[in-house]
Image (cartoon, rainbow, N blue to C red):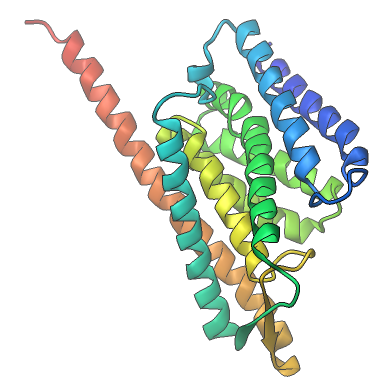
Length: 268
């Protein structure tokens, strides 16, 4: 029954995204994805409230509650995400024989609009995958089974959006493991939202997105294949290392909670 509700939640989020996406480019002057991010973030939060009440839970039980620590945690996640981008770019530069030059026509307003867009999209994706679904699957199937299922669904959504299976599995899928582990370790969505938004913004800034960015990569054509391999390997290394760090954190939090429970249950 609970597994069916998780599946229904995934379907509802997908329908909401599919219904909103066609209107995305109809408002001139805003970046692609901003309208979709805004509408689907609100809609996915409403769906979360509905499903949480259906299961007789609280928003805090799925990491979707907003509190006084949410904003500091978001900024902490954002800074960590930028740090991971720097690591990835360093690997790309050293192993892929790349350098970056300033792109023309990209100013402060463009960066600000993309920042807002990626925050909105990150809110939607974290609510849709690493909030209610991941928490309910984790309670039913355990940590890694739930993580893999959510990562596969996340990858499938990217395939539906036009990504290849390789990009979806080794890009979005691997990223989902990090964001999901951050959600479980911190018991909330503020840190993974910050992480996710910073990663996408950093990727856009250094020309990793199709829409360009503040810088564009330049390298010798003879090293183009090597640069692509370096980018993918560097991405996987950075994501897996960060996932492992959050896993260690999650284990520590779980063990500490278990010890406190044992201490309360111990006879005097």
